[in-house]
Length: 220
Image (tube, rainbow, N blue to C red; front, side, top):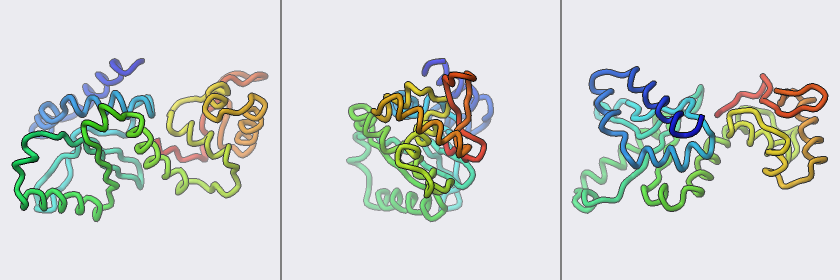
C-alpha cells in the first residue's frame, strides 16, 4: 500500500487503542505538521510506521504527563521526534516558560531519550535533509547491535539500506544505491549471505530479492 492507506491504518490503530485523555490528545494534537512529517520525512525514509507512536505519553518531571509528537521505541532505543511550529505564541512566551521547555527536554535526555527536533519549515521546505538526519540517528544503532569489524564499507551500506527500508531489497536497488556495477553488487550480496547477515527472499537459481538474516537485530 501507499502512504495514504498506510497512514490511515496507522492512525486508526492508535485511535482504537486509546481512550480518555490519551485519545483526546491524539485527536487534537496530531495535526497538519505531524502528518506532513510522516508524509515527507518518515515514509520516504522507511516505507512503514512500525515502532512509531504518535502523541506518546511520558511522565513529566513535575509529576504530571506530557506528550511527544512521535516516539520511536525498540528494545534499548527511545527516540523523541518533535515538530515545532513557528507562530505568534512563540513571541509571547515568557522567560520562565522558555526555561521550562528546556528543562523538559533535558529531563527526557536524562531519562534515556534521544531528542530530535525539526521546525515546520524544515519539514516543508527541506524534507530530504530531515530524512538524512532521521536515518543517521536510527541507523547508528546498527553499529551498536552488530559486530561490523569484519564487514567492508560496501557490506555495511547494504545492511543499512535493508534496515532503513524494512523490507526485502533487490540487486537492482542495491546497484542504484551504491552506484556500482552489477558484478560488484552480486559479490557483496553473496558475501553477506555467506556471513548469514542476508538471506535470499525470492528466487532459487537467480535470486531476485534478499532480506535480513536472523542474527541481524533490525533497529528499523
